[in-house]
Length: 294
Image (cartoon, rainbow, N blue to C red; front, side):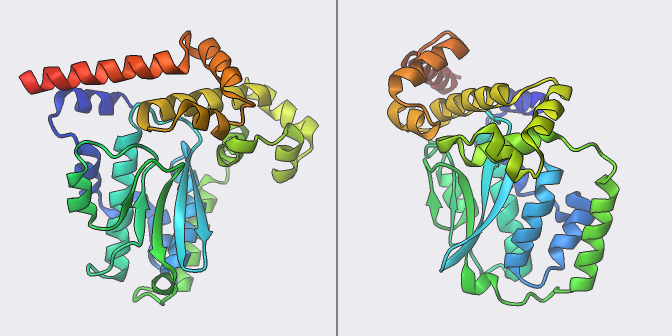
């Protein structure tokens, strides 16, 4: 985060995430990347990417999904990436696109790529570099592919190599302590619009609620604190990056009404959501004016 802050402050390249992500080699993922590369179909690549990607980059939860016509990867923030959400999403999505074309051919395109923030004023770079249908101001980032294309066998398919590579990768991290806090945040990130109870989360994690409380306490936190932290981080990210109304944000975070959301947000930040958004807008306008005068 510190490095990104320095780069953003000193660079005149607004689309730095796209530019940087476009130069990342697939080999940076090590043996996990090999497992993904040799799956039988692209749909299976996405499934493997979901399983292994959550271990490679814990701040994000990657979820594979299917519809009658499409398959895709949906991204949830377990830890808020704000104020650098755009950078990370640009980096990830162009990297996904490059892997997709490496595996299926440079003439193939995703069905669409969706971003969980407003269309940036430099979106021409998105159009130019991603060259596919784009969606903005959605609830979660998505990389989506035509299902028929995703289910075709790939030229590099080798289930033996992919299975061995995944097994070796999982063995290499097996001795690391399970981060139960991250597991809870990942589950909650998917269901913030209807926050499950501690008992429900414990059942999904296949532990007793007593064990879950004890393990969270060992890591210096509690279920209530995790819910509160995730709501706060998500609210700030939405106010920073999207055009969603305050009412819609309140609903998406499972608040009963706008008033209860505003009270909670003021407790978190010392400002109402409206005042926070106005201050951000004013800062952005001032920064844009200063940049134009440079």
